[in-house]
Length: 282
Ligand code: SIN
Image (cartoon, rainbow, N blue to C red; front, side, top):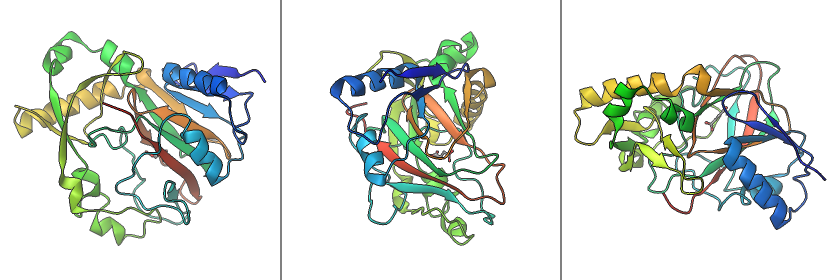
């Protein structure tokens, strides 16, 4: 079978057809897909009727299974979590802020695999923002401010007991299994500009979603800079808007991108299964 690769025509992203992911892939096929993933940063495979076992197997073509520190999992599959919102749910849209997954970890995940199961007829797109382009196209004054900065990451904003998905959110009827914890307050330092160890490219790594402040900078100055950066990082010219289909698998590179969920599907269920892909090093 020959692969058909259709770039999105936006900042990043490609659709890949001509491969059956329900079957074991050869080393040659895996190498080809990994190359496309690194090149396009987010790749989408339509019409793949994957079982949970298939989803875990395909994710492992891209790296080992990673941790999901604050999520529950689907029954019988400790590596798969459900990104889920019920039709009548009134909670906030989960992850509706540009972020990169679990950037507060010592070795943050290389990628994420997300598989569409119940897709609403409208809304619920996922937005991606290319952070290699955002780094390349930084205005000189912003570049001068971020040069050499170390960012302090933490999950507290979302997952501490008083965070956005903390105790009060748990009482508001969220269907997705989230496990807030005091551990979310732990911090981890990473350079703001990250060199990708597989491609050698430089990217802005993470956002105000997980970055609390910068080393050797006051909280107030850090917040101002994080907001200025967020506006720059998430400009439409760096974005790819992904429209979901049932039985579509999407795999993205967390080292090169930010992503954000979107709403617009009240009255409809939305369910996707997610596997986190570990990295081998920073
Ligand atoms: C996520 O950030 O993992 C969720 C993305 C989405 O629901 O579109």
